[in-house]
Length: 500
Image (cartoon, rainbow, N blue to C red):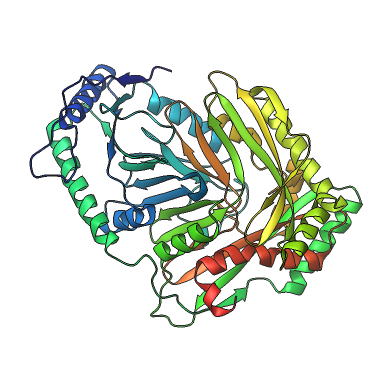
């Protein structure tokens, strides 16, 4: 792959007078756009121009709210509060949309073509960080072969978006990346002028947002179960019987609920929801992906894969129990989880499959000796870290193509379990339990499994939760476990104040 990083010259810092409240390296921006047009002329195709520089810090939620107020296009939010890292994408320079079972490999091919001969520049004093530069964000459906409904009509099987503007937060600084696809007929002067105007609009909107309260009044809602409890538990019992007969070893069954507003004049506020999720689940991946009027939003505890500095980091996450009411009860529940035959068996299946998937793309695959407890606000899980050295030339999408879906969200054996889910569950999961995250210019990036999530618009919310079913599963216990998992989004949408 031929990806060129332009090296800026010292002393080029300048600003278009009166245009922006921060200093934009305008000359380097112009050079980046001009170089991309020249390369476009040579190759007779669109060329990516990407420019990054440090900017002043704003609170992530306020910046996201400001980005929405600026109306520069659909927005994306991704934050790990405990790690003090975040990405906020605004608008779309271009996107990669795929459908069908080849979505991962097709996306990887399109990404490689986009990065080939891209012109990538960083302003003086701005060091490249994992989340800066031409980062594409997006996600994939849980199962490309599952029938679709109108609910997920805005979300194709695969979608990666290169934002027009990207705010990348790290522990000590924030950077702004400007991305644009340049063609032979484009004018770099007009493009630069438009960028300055849009950044001025964005900065004003963020400033406006910083003067607004983060949380709005919580709406009142009722909860409807799409499938009666008795019917869902009967489905679980039937699957348990099939497992005992040897049809498969494990299957994950999901269910959904609808949150219905009591007052049609009230709305669900996405900014307030993100603020609650960030405060309550700082160790999770807090995310929101906008498509039209819909937001796929959640706070998932599960990393699917991290690719950084040539290494792959992933984990097996399977086996759950609630948190205790007291410290002693919580410790006892955790100890029982670590020694639960049902949960250990479920966990071992996931560890084995993840390990085998990594061997296709990595050398030196290493698995932690024993599972650890991952304690979240309302549930604790068994977790086993797994690492490997990425084979040169591979990217994070290549790994995902073999890793997803893990037995933690699908089942084992994979194909048999997925077929059973399609025939039994009768649920359009869409992007729920699918990979969601980002990929950077060198093929590095991070994707999480989109759990503890829901599809929300201003008037309604559909939430999803799943349970791993093995031979020793009890349908009632699994049903109760699903409610622990629903609580993340129910409370995120304001249910904490309503007794939910």
